Length: 332
Image (cartoon, rainbow, N blue to C red; front, side):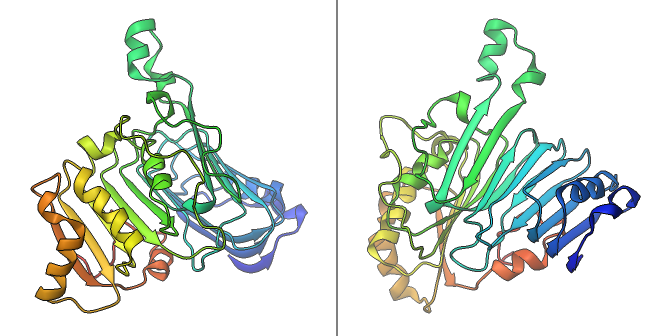
């Protein structure tokens, strides 16, 4: 549905029991109508919301939905609340410009199978995770049911706020063990915000760092990285990191070097740049990245030409067969 407006009186009459994919693009729809429409989509598996107006809060409860995507460029505040999505695997936030999604708040109340998340606009993101039970150890110590342990609250407040202000992500109580693939958008000026957000995802296997320019750079927006508090995913799970676009400036080298020197089970680091690469330039890159001192001897390094993937993400927004929506289609 695109470029249209919904009146208030048609809500109760809408019923689409076989509909599996639904897109709202540049649509004005009252909040009650939106909720009535979704409640009539019993088989819905994928929802894409782009530039939807008139709804102060989009609330979603769906037993079958597997993919939710939201894009919002308007200055009008919008909130998406995923109240209960037991089969939700991916939560995507497509973007075209540096200011996309600045006024979106996303709250996930229950999505116990969420594996793919992003791209989060790191410079303006506030991430809060509050689990009802702090860890499986509490189950053993106090007999808390495992069903309660699966319940958590994830708030992605994507607005101009101080990154992780007043919140400490350290500890098992504030983590999301289900997320395996994460994409972050960073201005590239400070490494600490990226490292601090990784604490929330101890089982992360793949990380995309998307460099971009933003009017408010992510400088001094959160606590500094404390090497005495290890990042769990770097020690046990993170196997692949992608940097795009990689322009070989000193700050980007700093980002990449940290992962080269600290990610202990890394298999591959990929750099997507604007120039061509040959044996001489690759050797130069290796020297700056200190590849000879890498933490994981299995780590391989790949340099290739950067191709924008923002449109690709939207073009395949409903394709649930795509295991990694952030991966360039030219890659195997």
